Length: 342
Image 1 (tube, rainbow, N blue to C red):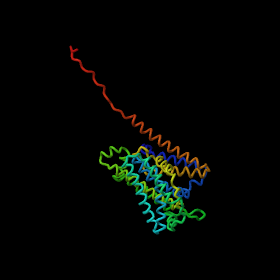
Image 2: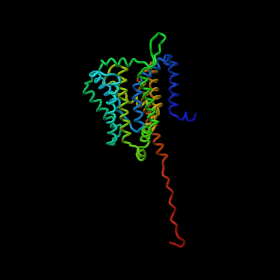
Image 3: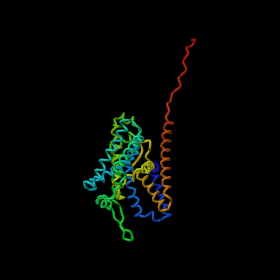
Image 4: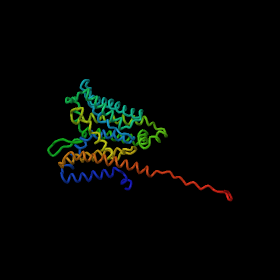
């Protein structure tokens, strides 16, 4: 029991339960299976990007460019599919290639030139997004391939309302769950996963014990690019349209969800289960505000408070560790004077 109470995820789960009870008391439509499936489906996009952000934060880095990466991967993939045809498998593969390349560029630049990750990724965010706007001229794509619509309508589990309307577990939600399971396995059961935690905890010590810090950094940013590209395709599946400016600007919401789930901005800490609970807490707050008819601007206030609290907690923890570290210097013994000496 003590071990359970020591976990950050326990408290996030408790907050979710409390919020759910409050929202349901105001609007009973919240606590229904149909609404739960809708929340999971509509937040799969955020959740998949959050997986990549989790890896980056655990490694001690940060990425601001992943929304731009998702947008480019989504836009270029749809253009390719419209011109050469293909299938959903081809669409996901094309997006992955684009996302991995763009993410690996971030990792290489950060490691090669030792520029702070936040500066590098802000620069690449503007570069990626600017190039997309220049070449696309801001045009939206409405006519997606038919298999995008067909795939988006697939349900792994199908149920029916009292009126006979179908609902259930979407294929998009199932994809998110599969990626979370694979990511958790990679983090906790592979040498690469342990290396990511080691680099985030102390890169110098990790290097001394034989961890390739360079390869770990390139991997986590390439992985972030991969997750961003998959999320971009999921976004296209959900809205059945592609806009050059529809994803950029959502970075802080994703980062807030991950740090709310227990990941530290200082690196070395974080779990997939915590990330999932963080995403769900923000999703429940947003959905609950809609059902309770609370102005949407308060959601942005909540996200801002989450980020402020998380950054403050991380800084306080680092400061506390530094204060607790000291060097014990024993006072020198006074010189002995020989008897009779002057």
